[in-house]
Length: 285
Image (cartoon, rainbow, N blue to C red; front, side, top):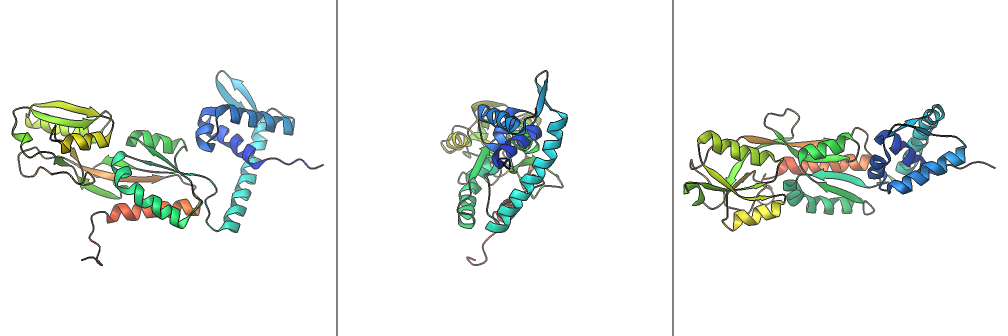
C-alpha cells in the first residue's frame, strides 16, 4: 500500500525549518505550537525516522531530516503550481500585510474592497505596528508585504513627503508648547522634539499614546499639537513660520521575494495607490 504524506504536514515541517522554531512556524502556517508539534510527530511516525534532534534549545535537522526537507520543498512547489494552474491566480493561503497606523487608516478600507472584488476567497492577515517591527516580521517571513515610513532620501522609497505641524493655530504662541505624540519608537515624535529643541522652544508632552486615533482626538480637541504627513487629514495644519521646519519622510513598500501572482498583484495595487495619493482625478477635474 502506498504511503501518502499530507501536504499540510509537510508545509508545517518546512515552516519549522525556515522559522527555526515551533513558535515562528506557528506564525507562518497559523496553527498553534502544540498542533505543529503533533504534525511533526505524525510525519516522523509515517516515515519511521527522526527529523530533528535538540542542541540545547535549538531544533537541528538530522541527516534524514535534511533529505526529507529537499523533497518536501519539491512537493510543496508542485502542489502550489497545480493549485495556481487550475484556479488561475487564486490565493491558496492568507495574505499577510503590515502597515504603520497612518496607512492602515487611509488605505486599508479601499484595498480590502479591491482584494475581495478580485479574489472573493482571499483571507487577509493584517498587522499594524511600527516600521522596525514590520521589517523584522518581513525578514523572518511572517509578513508578505509591509508599508512603512523611512528616512528622507531613501532611494528605494516609493514616495517622499514633508512632515507638517497640525493643531490649534493658537497653541504655538504659548510659552511652553503642548505636544501630543505617539509612544516610542516613532519617527514623528523624534522629529518634533528634535525640531523644537534645535529652535530652543520649550515644550511639554501632554499626550503620549500608542494609538493614532487617540492622537487625532487630542489634536482635534485642541489639547496639543503634533507632526505627521498629509495622511493625517481632516485636521488643521499650522502654517507660517510660527514653528520650526520639519524634515521629510519616505514611504517604504517592501515584499518577500517569492510571492504568488495574486499577492504580487496586491503589492502593485498598494504601490499604485500610494503613488497616486493626493493626485487629482482627471475625470473629476
